[in-house]
Amino acid sequence: MRLKTFRSDRRGAVAIMMAAASLAMLGVAGLAIDLGNLFTAKRALQGATDIAAIAAASNLSAAAAAANANALANNYLPTDIAAVTLGTYVANPAVAPSARFQPAPLASANAVQVTMTHQQPLYFVNLLWYRNAAASIPITTQATAAATQVVAFDLGSGSASLTGGVANAVIGATVGGTVNLSLADYQSLAGAQVDLFALANAVAVQLGQPADSYAQAFGSTISMVNFIAALQRVAPGVMPQLQSLATAAATGAATVDLSRLLEYGPYADLAVGGVEPQVTAVASVLSLLQNASQVSGSPHLISLNINANIPGISAVTAMMTVNEPPVGSTVMAIDQAGATLHTAQVRLFLSVTLAGTVSGAAVQVPLYLEIGYGTASLASLACNALDSSSTQVTLDVTPGLVNGWIGNVTAANMTNFAVEPTPTTATLLNLLNLATVTGRANATVGNVTPVPVTFSATDIANQTIKASSSTDFVGSLVSSLVGNLSLQVNVVGLPALVPPGLTGSVSSVLTAAVSPLDQLVTAALQAAGLNLGIADTWVTGARCSAATLAG
Image 1 (cartoon, rainbow, N blue to C red):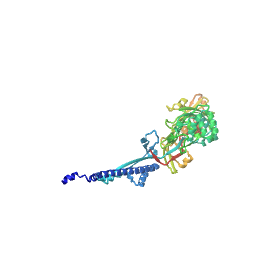
Image 2 (spheres, one colour):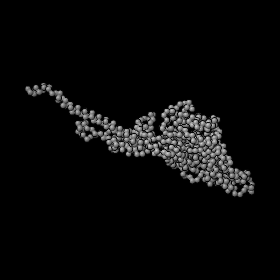
Image 3 (cartoon, rainbow, N blue to C red):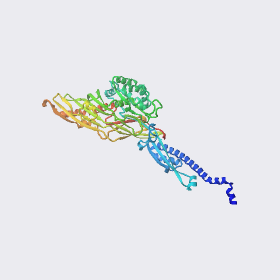
Image 4 (cartoon, rainbow, N blue to C red):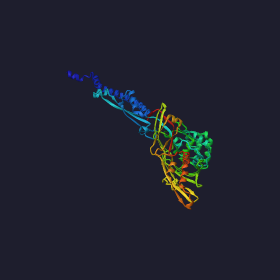
């Protein structure tokens, strides 16, 4: 009877079911609490990772130490730092977010990617389900931070040699007309500084084609007339000199390939005329004209009638061929570590009549120079966003190899860059058609090992020009050519009328002319923006902004 009553008694059923379900409810509550803890812990870990990445990107040379210090400051252990990876970050919407950061060495790095992994304890879930309160689960976060590190630098001749009419001849050939500027005019052009961002805007306005970006503004070939007009907009202080050049340019058809002149680097996609980047990027008007001569055709032969006005030299005729720098390079840049500049490859032939004579006849010297590409690479930038005085820029500079000859070449030789000319034996003296003195010589200047050149904050502020010389060559090129010259006398008339010691007399005249010839070669090359066996480099600005998160 009692058993039957017990079976049919429903009192307390709810309590029994609640007691049975309480364990499951506690498990669900524990799971919710642990999941909430995991979510909160991951948010905290992500914040610590973000801060560690920003600290590391702000101190690239000690990125790992900076990340570890910030982990400790945020109550994490250095062992929670799983990886600190240096690399480059490109903020390009066209690139997939996962591909914008690429590992890279310190020399070219501008960003850091930090990965943190922390063991987060699981309390209620383990206690109720696994009975292992000490168990934990790893949580991982990652952050990338980048700092803006940009340098504006240039490669070429810092100042032209303005001896006599050499500069007028070369600049005239560049703009495509006859130029008659004075020494004071060239000094004014060398002193007039142009903001390179403002120049892009001036080019767009001059062409009547508003540009969306700096890359678009400097992405085409324009006439020299338009290039000079754009310079007039941004350098009104030298308006008379530029107007003279504009008049000369109007008689020719010279052009400038702007895409080969200047690279805007990380600013290439910024809008022209908008907020100007906070980096000093300037160049003198003269430097811009010199560099324009290197990107105005490939190759082009320039005939120069030079009135050198150098004592010891009676007359000079010359040919110069300028072949553009290698494809994909420029001669000026506003860019990040790893950027490389190249000067143009140049051939120069000078037919020089010396003032010194032998038995009343003038001595002729044909000089041929082949100058390879000079290179400057931005090796590193060390700076602090809060202390600009600590800025230091290092360029790896390789002066162009120079192969020099005393000998003859033709115009066809000068324009064929597929083959390096081998000059033929030259007649240095013709003595009344009775005898001739001939000869040929060769000498080389150059080294293939880059020379590190460092610029301090003071150097950058003063735009200090530093020259890197070819170290594998001792003495001047011309002196070596004259020293290597082997002379031969060829008697074509009556031997009795040929004065004795003819080769010795010619050698004496040539030796006396070494300094004038060296001045002439240097002047002709520097007026074209080049130096003999030397690469001039200078930095006009460097910017290191505070690191920020990059996604």
